[in-house]
Amino acid sequence: MKDITFSARRQKTELWYLLGAFVVANLVNLWAITSYGAPIKEMFTSFFYVLTFTVFLYALSVIVRIVVYGIRSLIVNRKKLKTNNSL
Image (cartoon, rainbow, N blue to C red; front, side, top):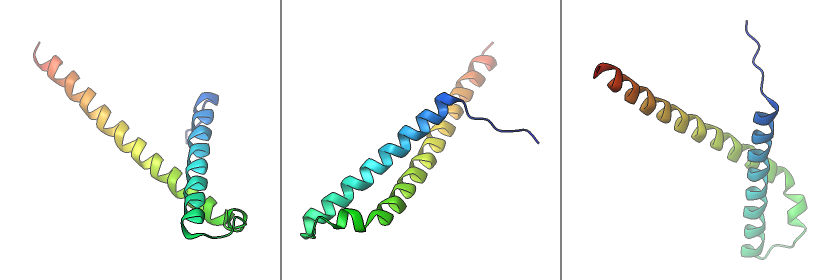
């Protein structure tokens, strides 16, 4: 079987996506706390819910990026096919 390796650049990019998902999850948590008038200690007690939501957001971003990449590659391949057929 072939080993799959990720470059350092790809790892940094994925970590930035994960950090972004974590920040968004914390902002959603802070919004919920202020909207419902909960005590600020909820920021710390609901940390595992924030982590779970972070994983969900990250997985959603991976799915969206895969779909966008697939559609983009289909469009590029279709353009290449049209230019090859016109010769």
